[in-house]
Image (cartoon, rainbow, N blue to C red; front, side, top):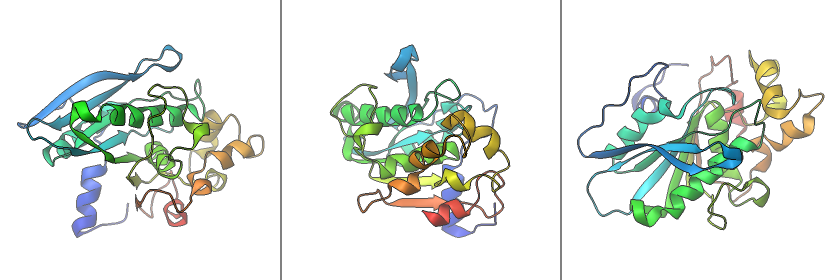
Length: 248
């Protein structure tokens, strides 16, 4: 990434997930942490989330859903455990979620799952002392794409899936998209692994599955109702070109 200073650097340090092989999180005083909470069970996959929240206070607290990266085919929710704990220390309820991965589960399965996670958080707002009108989402790379997709397709019926809590809104209040792609039709030639990653997620390359590339690109779903978004990207990114953020 290019060098960042001041507030921008603080945001990046807060949002970027921990590296691979991270140790189990050390839960700070004042925070409650629960791991392995099932939020949906599509196709018998028992999808889970890890949840951090302030130990005291009446709320209602704002909430953040964190979506891991991994090229839509890898990655673990635990990579955002540290972030959820930091957010809880600052007065948020934060969840990091698992979702179904390609190639077994291509688009839009991951979208269905992340929307189900938001619906679960909103459905449990009273129990968790969450303000249901202040649920944001963040993610990096593939997770950034999914976070951005949530931000531009709030309550779009075709992407809701059947992951539970039907009738509860999946709309998010805001998005922090960390180097997530916005237009898959322009990824080839700009990304060092697009030719390997995208056909697994979209069922073919740009020639054989162009419609899926168009349909899965958040840029094509932007309307005046889209959630306010902060895009964080570096100009030296070899996996997702920084222009993807500029286009948004």
